[in-house]
Amino acid sequence: MSYTAVSIQKKFKKSEFARIKIRDEFGFAQDDHVVGIVGRFDPIKGHENLIKAVGKVYREGRRNIRLVIAGFDAVSQTESIRKYIYDNGIEDIATITGFREDIADIYNSFDVCVVSSLGSEAICRVGMEAMACGVPLITSDTGVLPEISKNVYPKNDWERLSELLTDYDPSVTVYSLDDFASAFHKIMRM
Image 1 (cartoon, rainbow, N blue to C red):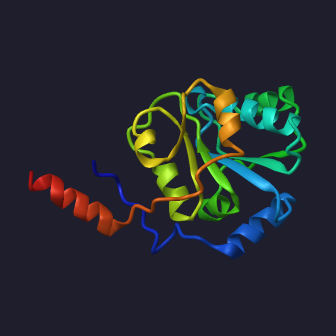
Image 2: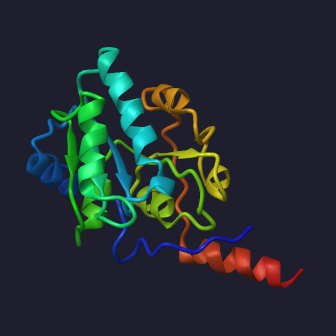
């Protein structure tokens, strides 16, 4: 299988400076466990499941967990995301960023990135961008996602997602242009 390459040489790369800068901006401590999601606000992206999972982890005593939701209005609106946050009792630990130009810096502030999609993941650019920044990935079992992450849960099982938020494989795979070209070349020779 061949995946779209993410250019780590230009925009997406690990940055300790960005990690510190964004965590300071959001009022997070450096030892907070920051869970993040990036994407438009749409029910298919599974924001509600991630919010429920973070709420469960928080209520079970993981007081240093934080949630960053980097996204923008689409099918769903910011107010519906805020309502999910409020209904799950995590309004004090969750941040909605809105659209950001500095998305690579946002990724770098995460300890783990979640792609909680319920559908529509033929190529997971968010996952590849996060891993290019050195951020581990947790994904639902939708589309291509199980092929790029070691941390996979059934798409509607937010309770399993909550378990993975505190017990996941921290390794990452970076999909470079060289890897993409090599995989593409191998496919073309078949």
